[in-house]
Image 1: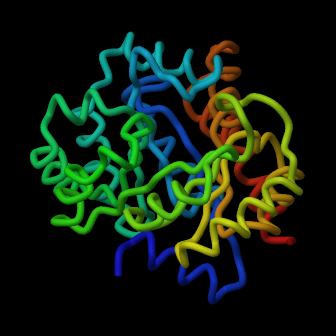
Image 2: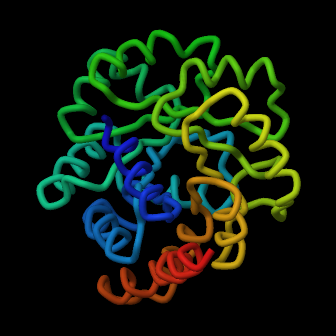
Length: 271
């Protein structure tokens, strides 16, 4: 059983839902990424998504685009991120880590070399936003050799045939994008989310994590009533940014920026 599958199974036995924060590696600095990962676990995170910074992200709203720019300015690259995961694993062998990014860095390294290096570092899942299911088999094959889960996005506009296609490739969990548009945009339509999750669950028994538009404890709790996982990106990345703007010391940044995760944990567990 993969670390991701084990995490969801354990939570199900406890009657709890997964809280999955997203941060961008290298934001606000390369040195602070691993301490931030540990702090998120301390505040109640179950799975951590690490954004691989990319110069031309297509799914990211302005908050996460700026985080990518800050990370690239500090020369954060894929090999450096794998080194961060290796360091994280020195003291945490339980929390699943998912890399979320775009195809170019992975293709530049090569699918086989990437899968091998990710396994060696302790990565549990990979989500590449711009590799469609029609072109995903080569990477999927390499990831399977190292028991790394391949996670896919499903959008509100994804039709049933494509859901079946994605479900046939996906492992770990399925990531449902809860609104049309980029990260941080719009407002949640929980009725739409519920209808779409019913359609997705007709084609897969995998847990479903819902992200995009989870802004606070109330929206996190609303999604926790519907899905197995709640993914939080822009709200957390913006909280980090706000602390950077205030020029707070590192410990204050970690404590203050991640308070949103502690608040969401309480709200989710109350569902």
